[in-house]
Image (cartoon, rainbow, N blue to C red):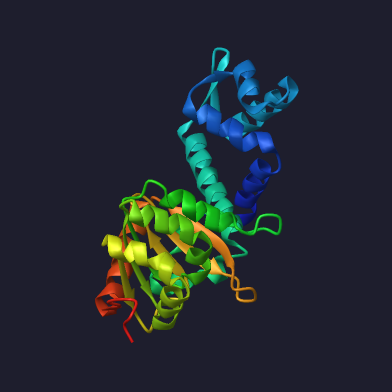
Length: 268
């Protein structure tokens, strides 16, 4: 690969990053030709700023002028796509920066690149149940729900919603640790009886579950992580990515194959 020096390349990256208008302006010109006035409307930049932008772009051969309009060259479009990809990566990293260690699903093959379009819901002091509420919103309308992992912190706060949906017809399979399953089924015996009797709930147990939670909804996949100090749900990451779905199905299937059924409330 031909290189002309990292310093010169980084100076162009710095040029784009220093102003909030430059990346958006180059991206806009990559979409279609625009006049200076149109470019100002798209970027909210002043006429003088737009003038300086297009001059700098022309010096770098990123845009060309045709009449009173400017359009990105192939070089400019190439740079615009690269900056968009970089910004997407940084946005994903920033969203996951403080919680990625709580979701060790990467040990099972989940890569951060697979979560580029994911929704990241993090608990905050003023709203500690944000991840749980997001989880409930994904449950609504789901016809088939499956869950494996550390689920008490996620499932227990919304047990009324889960009960209602299961009794109403949502086919549900939960794979939990034997002690957690026993705790729920004995502590909430009356609460669990109707879901179990409905025939829509299957509980399986596994002694070696992941420390994260993996939820499979009809369209989305959810991955939850708990705060090691409080035990509460700190984050829920959900996505409808096909690649994540394939990973989730394979991961869930592997745990299910090793799990054993919990037949009833009275099982010893």
